[in-house]
Length: 81
Image (cartoon, rainbow, N blue to C red; front, side, top):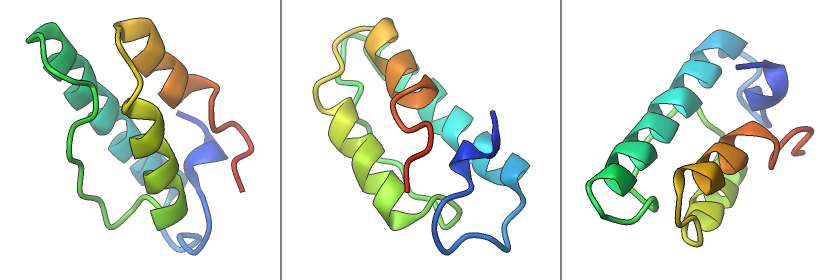
């Protein structure tokens, strides 16, 4: 994961920790899909900014396959303010 996950108000949190959190969320979403459930899974994080968290959660609502989920966590928020 890159520094694109170091978003608003979380400058004191190392980029790697934020990337790790995003990776955990992605794995949780993919596991849910693999079980035939929604990719829109609850995920609580004090590391991911509220704005980015909301955007990811919103995008996951319409994710229907692993490609959609990967897209949410890969390119969708590159440079997200």
